[in-house]
Image (cartoon, rainbow, N blue to C red; front, side):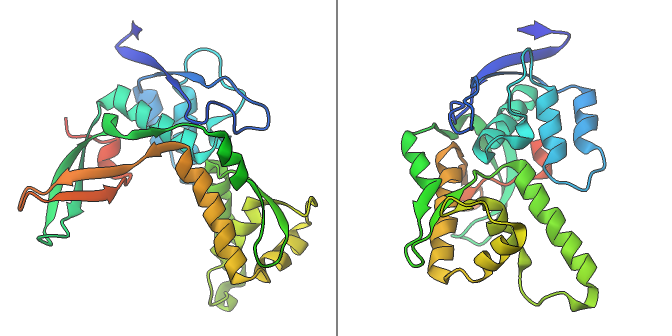
Length: 253
């Protein structure tokens, strides 16, 4: 569809809408961005993800999904972000990377349309509920959302500011991440203080196991964002992970 210099296209969410407590219609129609959408993206905010989610939400045409983009799983969010960029500015993405072969920093171009789609598989549910191998605790975790990532960062900054010179000499972000991820322990929703104690006393092996389960959910739904860029100096094929650089929304035109 074309209307007033904008275009729109319908996409199917990688999760197929099945990851949410109540399944949603996975068909999302996005229109290309306008000046107002760009203003929404660049508006001052203490959060990293909320402006991007509000921008995407504003570009959804017709009936909105029952789940706001801010509360979608991270895989669906990244998918919509990339599709919005493609229909607005095209799929050609310029970025700078360091070649591991000749050690030079080079400018490369990749095609975002070549990213591999990772669609929902029911086996992903096994990564949301499981038994920890060392403590034997039965854990149910939440899928990661943009809202969760923003709230973890905001809470970390709040605690560090409150602590001032007495700030702990360890990364409280890890503890907060686990506290936000864990939904229930042995079927019980812990109070914030009990959950913090549980997390801080968790065996390190269980910690790694839990984080691996969460990563598996994030990595199996959405886009495989590995990018291959040919080095202009030596011709080496550089394999790198996608990075949201300024050129993503400020492309070379």
